[in-house]
Image 1 (tube, rainbow, N blue to C red):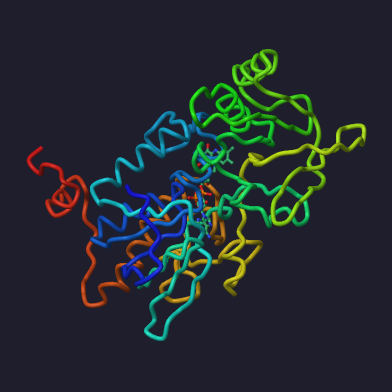
Image 2 (cartoon, rainbow, N blue to C red):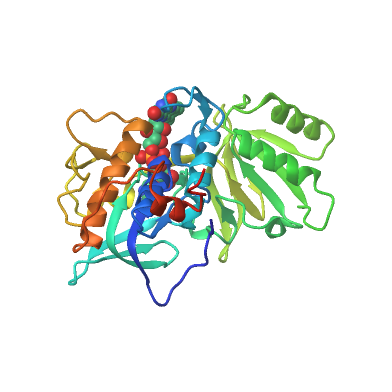
Length: 357
Ligand SMILES: Cc1cc2nc3c(=O)[nH]c(=O)nc-3n(C[C@H](O)[C@H](O)[C@H](O)COP(=O)(O)OP(=O)(O)OC[C@H]3O[C@@H](n4cnc5c(N)ncnc54)[C@H](O)[C@@H]3O)c2cc1C
């Protein structure tokens, strides 16, 4: 599994491109692999797993067939393990922004990191949308993005010697505030302030205890309030306005702002591709899980059809049939046979397992 570097030059040509690395996207790549179709997967998140990892990594799931219980994390780890023989190419941390059908019938797919793919078929496994950071709702502040305003941590060194303000009240914000405040090496910021809109945190008790003990030791400042404005000098951000629960506003000087307010799914780009949608979902047939555009399939939470249930097991079934639909397009002259993984020596060879067992 690789998070490959963006490729701004030649597009990557592939038989199949999967949008989304949630359970549907991962199992889709496996099913395509069984039919000898190489696929690429793109996800906005920097890791695979979709909702299972982002929303409930440690909660048990009780309705995966044959598995009495699995946490979201275990399910994803095993989907990746199952997929490993097909050496999947995952392009993570990038949103699929463009999808256009070419004159030759193939799709040109573009991402926010300028990666481009030319794919014979595209399988949308986009769930409830691309998980993207919740932005600070302050008009104009986005101009400082990636210079002084960050929604994810690149390198700790970016904050070395700086007055750092971290915004958020969940685990990620508290963990990073503690890590920066405890940093003793050259990456140590000059000061660390953690700002949350309430004086109650939604985080693990240990994370809260750690932040409070660093506050008591004078290594970290805790503030209650919301960023309501900013002060710029030249092209630089020099302070933010913080308004507390009583409506009092004060200016807080800073060099860097790390906003960790969590992620929320945004259908965003998919909704803007002119595809026919029903209540934010893509109508598909139930034979191949194809949309009405030839070569464009949709599986998992993003699709809709009579009787649709947004369950992982339904997604898995959809992936198997979509793979056969894709194979018919990719290998128009080949008769695609159903083979059992238990008995097919061809599948054993693809999976790298011993046929004699
Ligand atoms: C709290 C909770 C508990 C649940 N419990 C169960 C359960 O017990 N059993 C069960 O069967 N189901 C359960 N579900 C539902 C289950 O998680 C979903 O049905 C499943 O995750 C759908 O998988 P998916 O791959 O279709 O979509 P997702 O898991 O949503 O993954 C879609 C992925 O696509 C990416 N993406 C979308 N658009 C783009 C784009 N334009 N560019 C790049 N990436 C993009 C997203 O970032 C995301 O990672 C639960 C859901 C929740 C929220």
